Length: 168
Image (cartoon, rainbow, N blue to C red; front, side):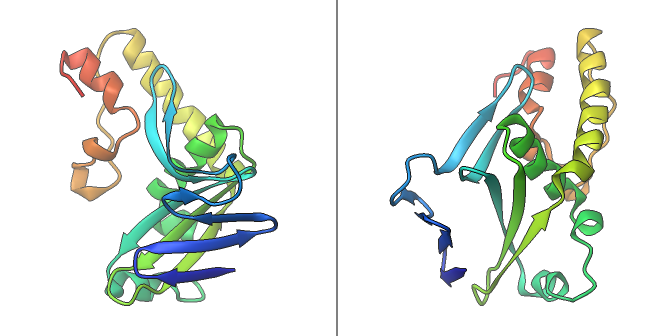
């Protein structure tokens, strides 16, 4: 299904053919598509007719774990799963995938993410955040990635920055 050469991917999904950075034959497919709601902003890497694909580069060391047969993507990469499912949910796509590329060898592995597993978690998180924003106070910090330094990757950064009077 995939052919990876350095930093781009060719995908054939039925009649859809996409090269990252260029939509080859189907204008319904996008690369780096902005996902925006009143209180959420993010960028979906690849938007196809029925799925969202988020691309992650990883070290060769981490890639070794990703390809183990018993690797649990939902547990080990929960933040990434929630991110791609949030985009799928907002854009009304029934499927979501995470595609990991080994930065050293350009090998890749793609995981389908169970969308319905993460929607209740996303809704619960949004409920807490939206309540805090309605009260015009910052929600309690609960970072899951990058040792708590994930603001630059957070889909709610615009809302927090607005409450703090900062520009994005």
